[in-house]
Image (cartoon, rainbow, N blue to C red; front, top):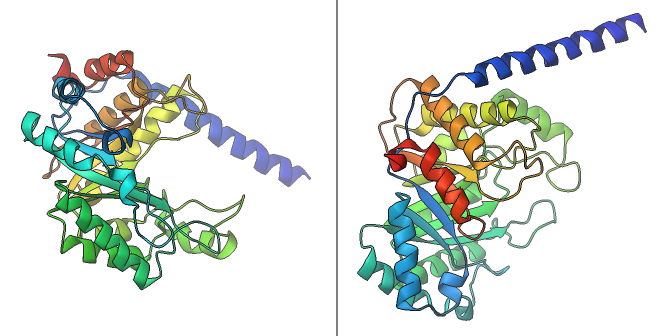
Length: 328
């Protein structure tokens, strides 16, 4: 029992030391500024409902004011067979025409997603080649409606998922612009085989789908943009949340920042610990991650704001304040 207590005391000491070190690290102001290449996930109503010219113009003003260059308009989700009922995107052509008139330089992408079947749980079986063919056909319809590209958000995607890579290869042939949303990376790549052996991929105690560096590079080879869903940290202090965003920013850009445009997803919705995981904290963490990187990535980089349906005017004001180019 003495050894048990010693191990527990040692572990507790390490946790406290890490917490103190993180708090001290968090006190310094970041030097890195913001960028003028940023993305926004947008609500389904833009393609599913009719809008007036004034509403389109107001949305474009918001994009201009906040330096949003890429918009992912939700146009799905996929049905279990990979199709999308036309009624779900009845006003997509009106949207794309309005964006062409009012903001021709903004890249507009059809945001298509679904929960994939893993170990018998989920909606869409991505491993079925027929489903993937219908998904690509659905994506081609979106391109025909005037979207610049396709944005996939299929969850979960585990390292080594060749079906997902095959979908990207097939979509690349028909989409001028292709992007994906991925979960934040694994902290230790070597732990993935251990987790795979010990924990299930579905159910209450499943282990999360975290891309390894190698898998992230495989995805980046096939797309133009990668958006990392770094939110939902479930961390109780600002310094821990900030360190989370800093690490994922620095690490992602070191791995693929010279290959592909990267957006780090930041939240504007109430998180589990809504006093610590806020938009200003997340953005400050991103900027500290850029400081640690020490140089600008070769490809464009920015924030991905999740999402337009949860972002208030106050949130946008915070965004412009903490992502410096917008505050000048």
